[in-house]
Length: 128
Image (cartoon, rainbow, N blue to C red):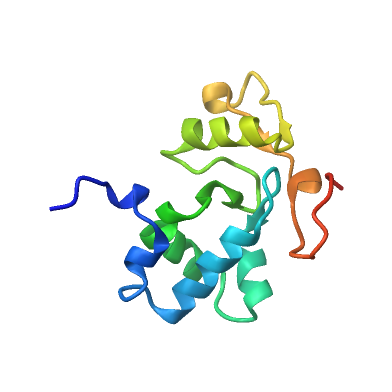
């Protein structure tokens, strides 16, 4: 039995078990530059296949081997159950955030989608 957890394994270890569509979704997730994000719908649109739910399912099942925190909800809310881990990544990468108001549950910031969203273009310099 391996001593590594699945989240620490490389994608190559999963290559035989991952469906072709899932591989394509994971490849897009890997292309997203540090400090930028794409929504589940953005990924589906970029692939011209599937929809947000299908992308979300792929990320839930196979996303641990890629920068999962860069594929997000369109409203900028942090992934439930993984908020603090994702927030650590966002802060380390300089991903634009909006501070939470006092009425916000847990006082967690949201992603600043206007500034953090990446369109999948080849140039990823700076935040727009």
